[in-house]
Length: 116
Image 1 (spheres, rainbow, N blue to C red):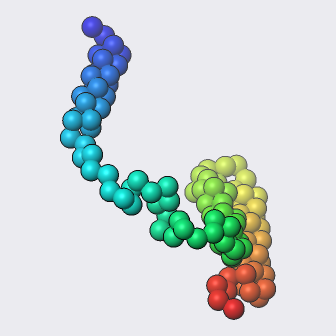
Image 2: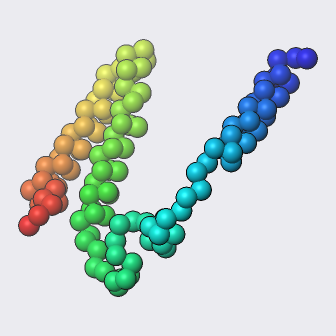
């Protein structure tokens, strides 16, 4: 029996054992909260069309914008191995400068203020 067949068989057997244990050991005690259609903590008897603050979306977009810098700056340690690392460092400095200017703009415009 070669190694690939052994690993596939072992994975399938382990998956079946864990699935059977899950069905066997699972607690099936639903309560009224779990059976309700809303599990988010809001009162389900109220209106479903409550006004939702746009600040939540603004903070999420700002987080994504400033979090994507990680993907752009992640290969930076390998830049010193290139033939021309100064060009990469200049581009990196430009990205960091643009992100800093964007953060300063959002700060001055009040985009980071949660309460007015």
